[in-house]
Image 1 (cartoon, one colour):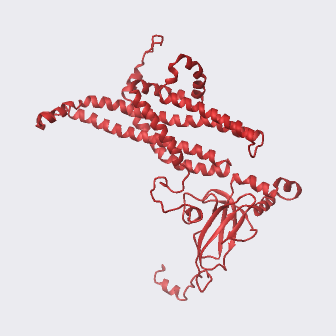
Image 2 (cartoon, one colour):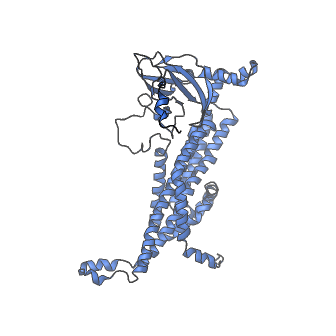
Image 3 (cartoon, rainbow, N blue to C red):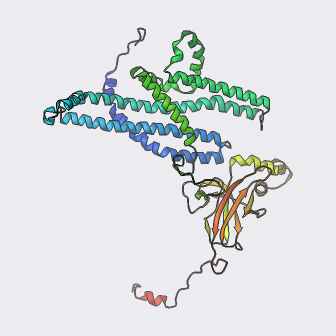
Length: 457
């Protein structure tokens, strides 16, 4: 403590709480871990809802969700280590009470060589004290890493994403000109450079703050980063850890933390297959043209539905296919532009939902085995099972032959080269080429006589 620092008298309740800190630590670790295990699924649901209904730029929402998931994973990992360490600590405390004398070397009857090994074993009380320090440090570091991830995202959100989006919105920019692109690029590199300088200072444990001439230049950057990354929340933990543990160990740990987190940004994305980033299977493809995504079918997936289109099943025995296409906020501008929605609303003296339905008809194209089925009759539909807004149409396949077929959903070719969804299904037939729905069996005439013996008198 510096000479100018005021002396603060420690209250008695704080001293007692410090001695019993393990109790709230274990309680909080258990409660937080329960929520952490559910957080990734909730974030995935939020991502689907936000990209469909709230925000048309899915990459920004995905970045937020990905960083939050990585932050939750770090917090979960740290709290699991904390609980394991506390478990060992509790066992050591109980063991020291049961056997206060510790190791009885006389009963081991070891040779002098191995007795030296036992002599080097620290007393159980010292192990308990060291474990106490480790457990409390793990608990604090876990929340520090969590806040660091959240703070880093908010820095780039406030300093990079929001200004660029505001610039695009104010000047109504569809495509950047050369000058605009250069200006935005220089600004982005400046913000990234400031973040990189702060990152170097953070990993080197305040190396840039040690020089008087440099600290005056660096202080405004430091103040900006402290404000935007919420470092005031975890700064006491950071400096306490830095000044009480080996500096090279802390620097190595922080460097590993940052490298793993950057690696996780690419791996912890929106993936339809759990563990896809870890598989070593190479002769397998998730390409749209050769795969069969279970989210396309109502009867196969209850958790992860397609955000493009869905039908009732991958095996169709009926004569009708129910095709549901999800409406997304990101496509509304294209739909409006394709049918000149604003102009039609002014010209046509009719209800707005008729104009909306007409625009949808003109926008979406449905192909069956690469054959365009023409304009479909679409109905607006809210799917209770998937909690998705969209449109539904019914495709007549009564004349479709048995075998594997594919439904393709596309937009106007002038706007979109590829397709939104390619849904394979198998057409199943019976009774020599066409499907006859089963008829209910007629009750036999003597059914009453069969039940007569069991009816109450």
